[in-house]
Image (tube, rainbow, N blue to C red; front, side, top):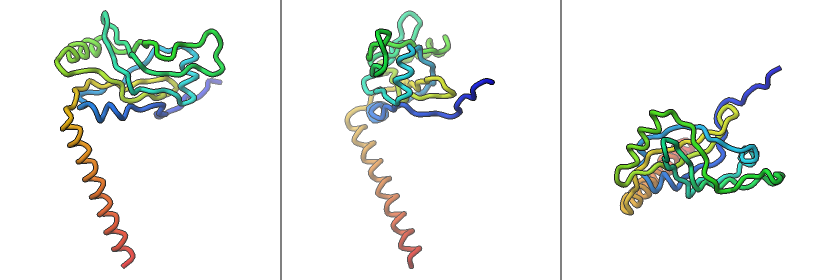
Length: 162
């Protein structure tokens, strides 16, 4: 009898700093070429996307600086923690990303690492760097919406108790 595959997304790691530092222009979901011990380490929910970036070399997309710690119970077959990993994308997507990333100020960053139907997927984004004043503006808008939501919920609580 075949084993049922998990449906839905099980999040492993997110890169919240990327959404703060960049304007996200376009997102892509892609597969990742991994070793067995890397998958086992990821199943334990251990990874860091903070310094990660995508580089396109000779028509292939490579993910750099993603930290996947060594598998604790691994032997001599264990993987290197910060090796470059190949991304699985369609040729048209790679060509589009390559041409867009050549533009000034554009880069490709990983946003999330997750399991989807038992396979490891990476959400990458074509992004443009934010200026310092853009970052402050984003934080100010977040704070304003948070304060507005608090005021609305407080008014609703007062209305219910009255």
